[in-house]
Length: 444
Image (cartoon, rainbow, N blue to C red):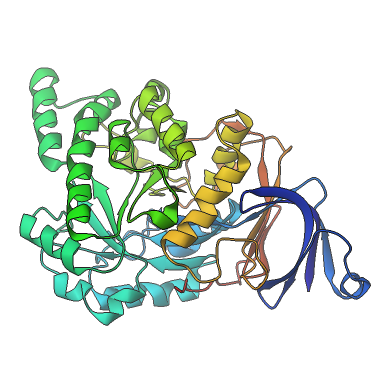
């Protein structure tokens, strides 16, 4: 038995002082007042006075790069970074080598994760223009959702056939999660800017090429299809003010169309390109402060439901070159919760909202069983945070396999000190229990 004593719990919209008992992987009691003497005598006690206790973060969009791209990252390395940052569960994307577009490939990834992951895990199965039958197999339901690229992607994962899209939205009963950027708009913008300025465009052109118009053109089609067929649509990594017109401000349980925003779109703006260059090159692109502020407000208002990372490591060499050549994506899973808590300190978000959008909401959206809350009977996926511990992101404290972060040199005021996965202390003040393995996420 482990007893976490005198923590400040942040859970289900409330903040209160309590102690939490962990037995056999689960939360067995929450004590707001007196703790029975028998429990005190038998348990291993952790003094959490002055610390915040949160449910573990559930990141619904990561690219841990396995299989086939493991020079950038792998399930073991990136799950280490995840638990160090307070993320206890992740959902990994299908654009690997080979792509996760068959039930066989999906099952192989689950098998690999069972051997390597320090965090709990699930995977998306990817849609293509010609794998509808695969998506409809019973085995595909093991996936967290179907991932649909309605914009630029690798290989054959750009689904641009209108008939295929109609079939996917009308016949797939799972959540359909989309990357929405119009390839037509992107290519027109690219032609316009390269004709005017040449091929060696600097990073400031990235958000002009992968523009707000490109995002809205694609997102609006996805929403139209979802409404037409009454589909469950989840819009990944929203990045523009304009797209907020497509979403409704109402409780998650009343929605069939939901939205996600990534930490980097809440933290950076296009003003940071001059300082950080390709470090903050993502698809969709980092856009204006007005877009960033609109995303923040939409999260508060309930238009956006989930905060995630789109953690997508590349090697430093791959991030070099012009805006047309440098790889898009960056590592963020080790620092996502820290960044969000810094925004709380700045007065942007309440800590209750952060927990809602990073733990409760993803658990509800993907119908996860016994995850996402501090509740008796639920798995003890828990994070202890010191809200008064200043520290700086440096190469020496990075756990990403790629070895860099766009946040290097940033000083934060909150620090993850302990992370429990299924009741096991997997991260403890810089020390990782690398022998522990997480569980496959299950659905209600």
